[in-house]
Image (cartoon, rainbow, N blue to C red; front, side, top):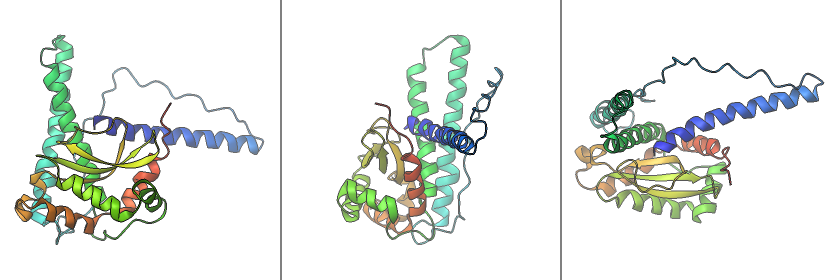
Length: 252
């Protein structure tokens, strides 16, 4: 899932390229100068990449009551998600120290730790946006058509994602993803935060199957938790992610 973050950054960059091209075409049609603008200056050598930051929730802690209590949401976001952010930043510092010392004895463990924490950060960041107090129901438009085309029907998709999430062995996630190579939707069953995923797929809708997400409310009955999640899915957010993902054409 580390690549999922890079893909999202790529999509943002690709969008900028598309806008630039469109402006050039418009200038040519209007008889203006079609020459592209000068390339931006290269960043200074001393520029330091930004660290990862815990995002604010897009709603209050009590907004999802009935499915997720304010207490559980507070613990999940402020404690568990925050720990992944801290873990990712700490691991980056350790990797920088390893490079500075030219000592890579601990590299294997550090790479695994970075993948785990960064993927946990990315998936939780998507998870909060995928949910909402006025969610539920079914998607419309292009997303609905894509679901029907990829799975046969919404009910078939719902059954597959529910089963994938409920049946995770140990801890993990169920996810609806977009595959830019086949240009279709898939369901993935993610182990931990980063295992058992198709390389290059883009997550659109993710369901958390870690016990910290539900145990205080639903005990060991994960199936009840997953069933209730469907009542708060923010399909507008999922549709927006789908529209963005479709802009990336996988190079063949």
